[in-house]
Image 1 (tube, rainbow, N blue to C red):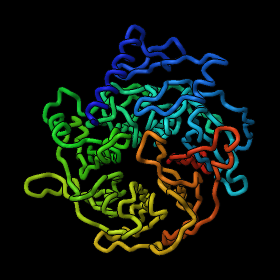
Image 2 (tube, helix red, strand yellow):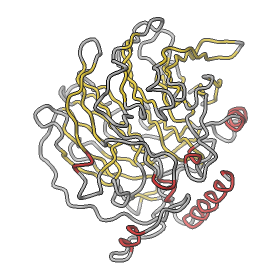
Image 3 (cartoon, rainbow, N blue to C red):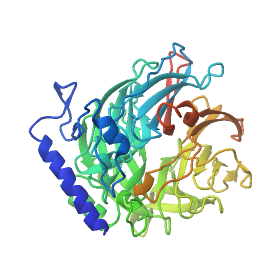
Image 4 (cartoon, helix red, strand yellow):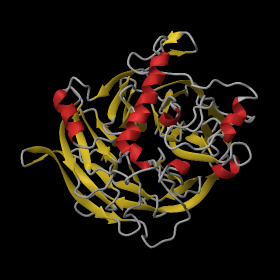
Length: 484
């Protein structure tokens, strides 16, 4: 059944590409964009008085959704405040009809939670996913988890050279892959991005590379790389997590789920137990590293300053975090995995476990989406990790997923929303749609402080709001701004 669904998606997608092949991808109607990527207009143009009721009354279809244009955005009065700490929240309209948007919000104590600017993208129903900042802090890129279902672009670029007035710049999509997940900036400009699925949402996905302007320049492994291509064809390749060490010239991706298997009808979500180790000098896959019974390796991050360049990887089905040693070998194979910590019942089968690690490599934080819990570990000694939270505490959060340590390490930002794909999907996790601002003490322990209620803020204008991810800017020191 899933194979037939894939072919149906592929046929629609190819037809769309053929229809647009005669005209180059453009931005602003004039400038040619991606050498490898595409940027296509909506299949149904916006016609006032005609497409609004079509968008509002369209029934959910089994896989592909009607590619209707978004409803007009409600008016918003921008704020003129200029806080030192800013949160950029990549947010979906709660009704899936209005435009998805980037919300610029103050994180300063005196103006906390004030919405400064809303920056719309041209489409709706993308299910905004992860967000990342460029090395110079002038560009943000956000991915759309479900953009493919409306045959829309899947990556959205914002100009934040004026941090208080972000502007939408352009969007695009890859050719071989879709379902944008993790984003990592390149020191010379541009990004590495995991695309979890193929062009039709099946396996294999790709590791996508862009240049400084957001042009897609590679989808790794390339089809001419025979050994790496055989690797991803021979075993599920659905990269979600991504971590890069530019000094050692390696990257790790973690395989999560085959995207199309979360859609109805499904034989069950197809989860992976593997990570891939890439050599960045030629982008070849050096090895596949397995966490036995991991049932979805959602996230992986290198531990800063670790002498062996160790990384932490979350095994969602097991409710565990593992240590990946990329330069150790076992049975002649590069890369090993060792259990670090079992989080217990609240973490097992939690569908999503995401993480963040402090820049000194001593603290790590984890969210258990279905367990409604945030956990903290002291990882300064990997042979003796210490849990800092109370596993039996009932925490004031529903559906925690994305987690970020503030650049000054005084706060932890947790978002209470993962994925709600609607009637067409088996994944609709509960969420409170809030940004939770937690206080951190010197030991790394946290206490719950304030929240920003996105659902309440946009209840009457966009049917609520679904903030999935955030990037924090700290402009306290103009000579040394922080982008994270």
